[in-house]
Length: 375
Image (cartoon, rainbow, N blue to C red; front, side, top):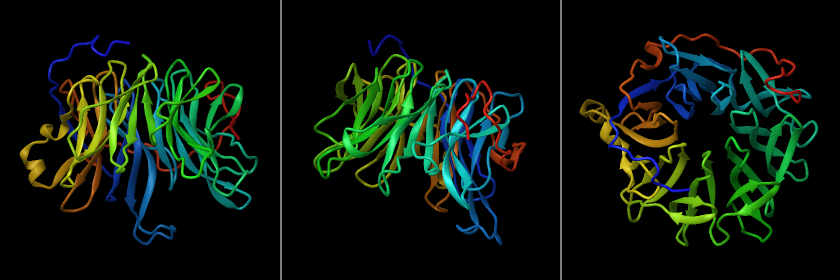
């Protein structure tokens, strides 16, 4: 696959702060091509009996596909949304009561319904869904039941729940899947200390993308290009592209801790960098073989003066819209943000939000679009 099949002009982005539900933190994890964004948001529920105190976390959908932007809570407290496809199906994790206790459970939300996905271990719902493709296939991880903390990369499809395995170690995690069903993530090896190699699962096989380095493969597009990071001997992270399993270290600043988070079908890449002086920077590579652009240039001076910096870019859709997390160095808040590439604005956080749900729907039996494995 050629990296330069699409030519780009320098992007012009409009920044929008997605704000919070009143808490200190929100995080945007993914965006689909319609402009629907998902992640986690917090409420400041003082006086709450919640075990974590006043700051409570909820899976959230920011929807810019309508004329009036909406913010929706997808589930109850301690829920997180990690992936969304172009059919508006959202995956993540939420709490499910099992035998009198609440356990973190892989969850899919679609068409107003909440469905819990089966785990690799009967009765043990320690699992999380990380991504979903447009065919409805979900990937993530699940507790195996074989040891206290062993979790394996997991795939859920219309045939059931599938253990994707490891490189001989105890743990693995599936982080992304493209529309051809190719899965990427990380897996541990059999030797002591042989942790988190970037891997790809394809045609029933697991392939170690970087046998001599630790790291992770974070994203794969429909062209088969994979991005992520590897660690050097001094434990600095470097952004990496894998093209037909050939590894290429992408450009980044010397002495920085840098990684690539996502790649779209136009081969644009986003990620993050912690510079040698400890500054955070959200980055865009217009193609994987070009130098990155610091996305903070699209903040106006008043936002910079208020202490805001774009710290982390987590996803980019095929329109070039980018989501991530902005950090305030004065108040220590973190807010989800979106950068729109075509001048579309209107997402202004809670001021413009219409909250259309405040609690998780009751569990449903899976419908045809979710399959028949929900439990």
